[in-house]
Image 1 (cartoon, rainbow, N blue to C red):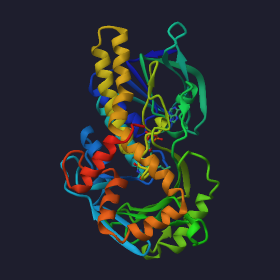
Image 2 (cartoon, helix red, strand yellow; image 1 turned 90 degrees about the vertical axis):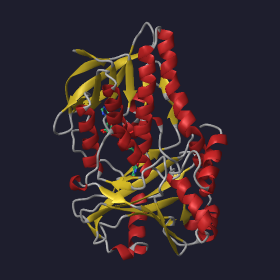
Image 3 (cartoon, rainbow, N blue to C red; image 1 turned 135 degrees about the horizontal axis):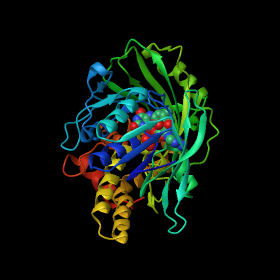
Image 4 (cartoon, protein in one colour; image 1 turned 30 degrees about the vertical axis):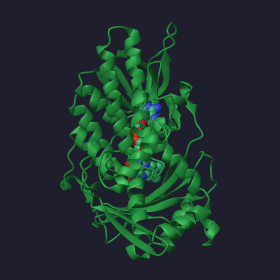
Length: 425
Ligand SMILES: Cc1cc2nc3c(=O)[nH]c(=O)nc-3n(C[C@H](O)[C@H](O)[C@H](O)COP(=O)(O)OP(=O)(O)OC[C@H]3O[C@@H](n4cnc5c(N)ncnc54)[C@H](O)[C@@H]3O)c2cc1C
């Protein structure tokens, strides 16, 4: 059986649902194929910076407290005996608050929004392969199998065909791999999280701990990474930690053990008790455009499948949604094209726009990742950086990627200049 559409999107996480929403809103016939059924668990910190809130605003998604959304008023950074609070600022380009919502609810909400915009979001549909047009060599669609309630693939393979296929299937990047997209030696994170009960579940700060130790507490045992506590307002907090490898090499670290050690020694003031039904789960985080090209021969990559995660902080939701918005721009241009060549040029503007908007900042992130890999640099940063307010003022903007791209204060202007002059990743 073959189904035709204007666009097929593989995966309905934030990247896939945002893509489906934007393209459906533009009048495209979009089918998004999601192997899971919502609500489904997704390993994540559940934290949204103002950058991600801005993307929700662009999509027209509201975030009422009654649906479980909780606002944060800033970032608290802890390390080297210091504890600093940086409220999200009043900026022209960003809202002055962050949000948290567990991913099972968040992703369902986004998928529903895509449906409301006119996209056909089909759950329980696993994409198994790409279909290539033998004459042109272009990707012409995908092969799909149904997934039953037990998570098993059942029934015969079906074909879904469209002139544009979007791989939004997350870090597994099955489609990109199937099509032979290159993986580059770029930063890669590994992170684990679990839900914990705490009386401080309504605290309006996203807390980041800049010291993660590899078991012992010597200077050389400081790891490149951070721990987080994101209160969820429902009696619990999302608690986790992640480490960074500058060129994506496996670190061999036992992240579950690191998390247990950190929970025992560094965050006593939260009075954590485990949520019985919550397991410690982890995943890799592909960063700084570690896979590409982001468009070729009818297949576009959005979100984790194209490594669109911020190497400074491991945030990927905002960038997946931003990429979706950018891809929709390119698809509209392609639809207006008069020839196939013109349409292809329009699609090729997608990777160019991504590099223009994020490439410089991601390059800074790559430099940061290779520096903090050295325990001495981490030590110097926590020892000499944390006590200096102006250094940390700059650093919190840099880490969160929330700064005014034009104008703003000295830190905004410095960051904007650095991101502009850095070679685009
Ligand atoms: C421990 C941890 C903590 C994190 N914390 C944060 C955080 O606090 N804030 C933040 O912004 N980012 C965080 N991230 C990163 C963030 O989770 C990802 O960047 C984000 O989910 C990327 O969205 P996506 O849509 O590209 O991929 P995903 O969210 O992974 O969605 C991909 C979707 O595709 C589906 N899929 C996969 N394969 C197929 C297939 N073959 N057929 C059909 N469907 C398929 C999956 O079921 C899934 O629904 C964290 C990551 C980890 C591992």
